[in-house]
Length: 166
Ligand code: PNS
Image (cartoon, rainbow, N blue to C red; front, side, top):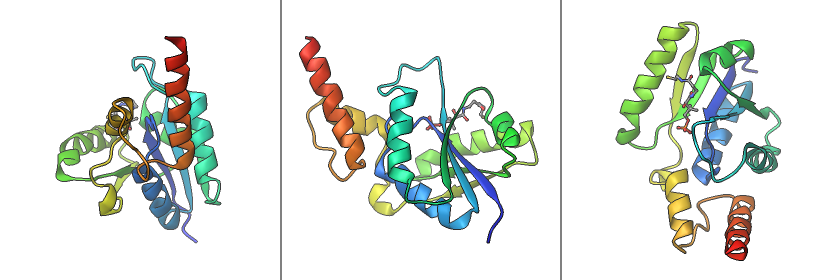
């Protein structure tokens, strides 16, 4: 059994099948994996933190070593409080690399004990992002197969709630 504990941080607004693919891969490599949702007061998210927790918990409950949590402040401080050694991030394409490299090196500068590990989601999800899911859905396109069913359902509920409010 691998005793490494990893944190998979992100906004998850909303969770996509690409995130889920990475969570599954991470759960096979690490002894414990915490999916950590950033509480970011500067962003105006589509889904509240509570909604995102519910969606993440229901889709990851089948992985015995995966837990869902919230964090704020510096990621490295959270990782250290959790007693974790690794930050897990996904790289879909070369375009992700620059931003991810900057973050990984900044995190290393802040706390050199923490390693960032990059994994690639399945290539079927290489074009997928939360931003594009929201855009496609808002413009009436289908997001079937791109997000878990619970997320698709929540997107529909949001759309009908906002249509009802008009
Ligand atoms: O899903 P995202 O939005 O790409 O995730 C970005 C995230 C949450 C990993 C990043 O913004 C983060 O770690 N924020 C916490 C604040 C912090 O530690 N900033 C310095 C990191 S270089």
